[in-house]
Length: 368
Image (cartoon, rainbow, N blue to C red; front, side, top):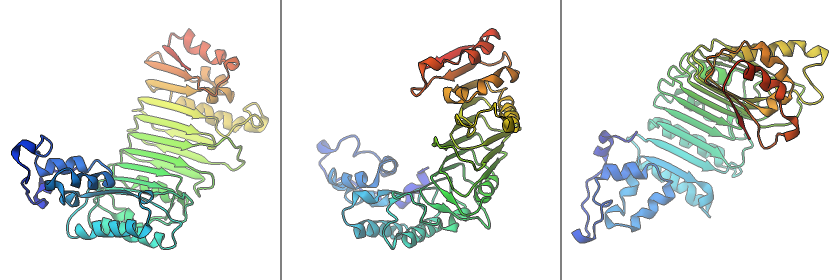
């Protein structure tokens, strides 16, 4: 967060406008104006220079960058702007470095990794990098694993190398979108070695190099796992969650075969939408799926102490509703809802799944 201490880097400037022309915003202290600028895209911050002569160069003191390559007709201008920002902040520290780039340019991977290395040396707190191509051609700079100032990390459309060493004592938030992993243990090691990690969100793609994901954390509060696919993959994929402090779990997944829940005494809310990679051709009744039936039951029992539970209609339609009565649900449930999403056919109303909690006196909300 931009603080009063950061204000020391800002040279005080008095408005050259007559008092009658100075509005309330212009009269704010520089450090407050910079706090406002810090929450705007850089292109909009630059535009403020025409609003007041006092602000002509003030935008250059903002300790953050939020830039999109698509806002520039000339790629070289984009590159020059990023370089100039990092050069202006040499010897200082930066709050945010957010960049949306195009890796199809031949020099881009080297540029981005150079920028990441520089921002790490400038003690960046929030790093957010997105590749508009999303083809995972760019290998993330391993420096990101030892950026000790980092508080949040968001990566989109790139490859993540296996960490030799992780030193992220302040990292609280990780968001990874369509990322490919060069080592199947890369993400597990990253998560397990962040001592204050609170939130993890993963939006996966098929073939991301991670058949087994173990989420092991003593500090994790929120875990979101997305895999948007309707295809039937024969390869097994496993997600194992061992996070005793976890309070919120969101799963929206069409490809993962097995979810294993361990040690969840603190879970407050769960939102589940998965068919455990079961399509019409691979139903729970099939003889060789007995082991999977046990896994599904163990998963449901593992979240049965949660206070607020939402199970999507797609999950019910995969014949999991037959296992609901075996969960041993407690009357302590404050909210139990079965989501009937737009894709759900009205003719497939899961009455058999609803009857059990209704008989037990649970509160029920049907979501259209």
